[in-house]
Amino acid sequence: MDTTTLKEFWHGKYNRPFKEIFGNEKYEDLLREFLQRVLNKKIEEITYLQTELKTGNLVERAKTVDLLVRTEKKILHVEMNTNNPAYLHLRNACYFFNKISSQTKIGEDYDLEYEFIHIDFTYNMKDNKNVVEKYTISNEDGSKNYLDNIEIWEFNMDIANSFWYNKDEKNINKYKHLIMFDLDKDDLKTLSNGDDFVAKYTDELTKLNDSDEFQSWMTYEEDQQMILNTEKKMSYNEGLEKGKLEIAKSLLQQKINIDVISKATGLSNDEILKL
Image 1 (cartoon, rainbow, N blue to C red):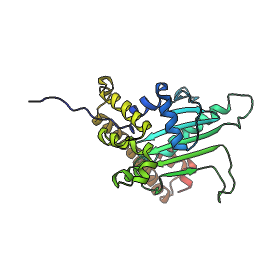
Image 2: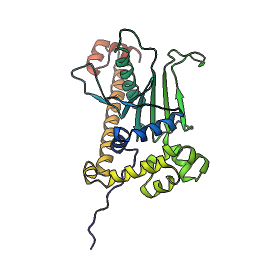
Image 3: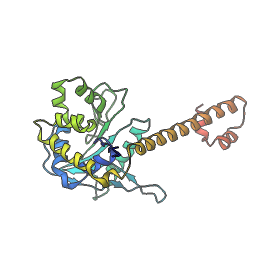
Image 4: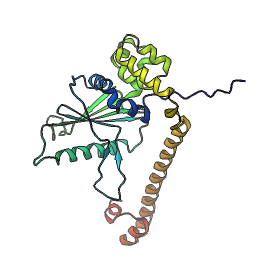
């Protein structure tokens, strides 16, 4: 009887393999080609920056981003998001602006030369019908930017994947660098045919998956359980907030003093007055 346990093949979209390949200076050539395809811009040099951001608060946990690099006069913050929870944009924006803030404090004046680009590769998006959306901080009609050196790019990875499963050859060739993150080994070999970049990525991801050390880090089931626990915690916290609001509304209807309601629910007076 064959008792061999089949190893889970970790796709590149997961946090650990993504960081192991694209966050490793050993594979700088892969990262450079990947970013060039994403941004459609030539990149001459890459400097890896520390992914653990300073919080400025001794009691606050360190913030760790997926990838942070400097290319010429650009700071690129990259996040690979396997899920699309309600807090995603806010969390990633906090990380992004944390880096902008720290960069502008380096010299004696505000640094106007650097361009800051945040890039989200996101799965399970339901409200975005384009492969990529680009955002800037601008006025209502988009005619004038509040800040000229900040861009946010968000890629809908599910749309990119649909090209593969629908055998849309034109878009498969156009978006290979996105499609590759959610394919198994055999499909990756097919996708990489004639493309040296995808072929090298496939080779390195396969070697990573074949490593016992990497496989022992976490099973697929453990990863899914961690995601589930996070979602449960979010739902619980959201439920608590909704419960507080409903209690506050009920107490207001009973003409209870606002200070008493605040003490009972933990809501601020301003939050209660808005009800």
